[in-house]
Length: 273
Length: 357
Image (cartoon, rainbow over all chains, first blue to last red; front, side, top):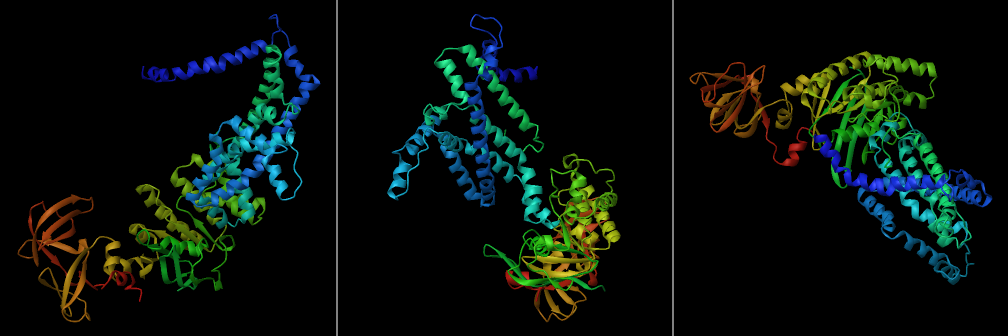
């Protein structure tokens, strides 16, 4: 009886999940595998092989991968530096990293548009020092730039979290047993932060793969990601069947990447994902 | 006597302007079980960490086997540490943990496998190679930490309160295990603890420390029977520490009553600390006693009754095998050779230094 009462507490969330997660997924599945008339078809899903769709998917995977690699390359040393700082300053720096996340996502993207535009702040700054301007707005570079900026905290935090859980006496024990800095890094620190790295990769790669707002606003219609193709199918062509079919393919990629990363194991439970 | 293996000379160390160790001198002999004993903050762990290489002293030098190792990093020292919280590598199996130091030294696989077997047998955990760290109890983890340290055949094993996190029964078992291990391995143990019973049970030599100074160095018997000052007497076992007045040689006045004792050379009418162990106080009938008093508290401790007797304004702690009920009128008697006389320190600083000089 007590158990039942407790389970009832989950009621509101279950309702929410059913209405806004489960139902839409089922609807997408329905639309993905039916034609306009309601007949069963594979056409919507298989249309991913159309060159324009395939190109968008490949570009999404490519930019997502680049973004993830850059985030990882920036975050790991940063987390190490952060972890070696005094506890007081650690809290402050982490706060600074989280601060941009309190701002609206769209606002941040628009801010980058202002910064990167041909007559924008960066170019005028470069101009005052007599340096040549940069012309990266409306290119994949700008999209990657902004995605790295947006998703960086999602990489830093889980890695920093895993790193800060390594007890100092574990490092001392390794030194005591004869390990130099390189061995300590590769045999102790890297394996013990792997779960954080895996969480970080998932939390950066998945939103980067499915992003469409960044490419929309910073790509100027020239950078077509799979997210943009899906958005167009829904919003401009009102072709829910095609949009759902492509969404289904994207979902498979998302689930596959998550399964792949999770199979690397989270034995220590140090990840936050 | 065997030769000196580790020699600490004029070691000073402070953290954030606070002096932890001040001009500490200590040597450790080969094949000795030496215990650094003291309350928290006395500098015992810092001393151990300086020997292990985890701290560098501000002043002074550390000699190891005739070689100056003051600035040598821990990974180049011929000693290993067993940490208080075990510090096992959580991502490795037990065998991998034990093999860690040997792999760094590039030993062959057969050598490593033999060593793992040998070490696990030594700590009574045969067949545990494949197990994960989480599957072990605290006591088992501590044994693995010891196994991981000793496979490297260090000349000295440093142990930083290794039994602190274990429960009483297990702690007592491990004390005997550690003595056995030390005898089997024939190496030097440097042990840090705040537990006087642990120190008395295991050590060849005890170093009692307080506020960064060594108070007394000696065998467990020396330290217990002949404490050099009130701090040591109080820290090692239980004591009655009473203000006294040394009237002349072999005569001391405690609580307005004259007691004969065996100490000489303190001068005439000098205030002193008088230390009497609770088991050395005899409860007799009021007429036979040197002092009279009433029992104010009585606790059964198994081996003895812990009795508190209020007499002339002082609460005597008495360990006796005879039961005297609360309120009983009793007499107190102490044999002259059981009365220990100590100079009173004149200031707090002196209290810390006095035996050091």
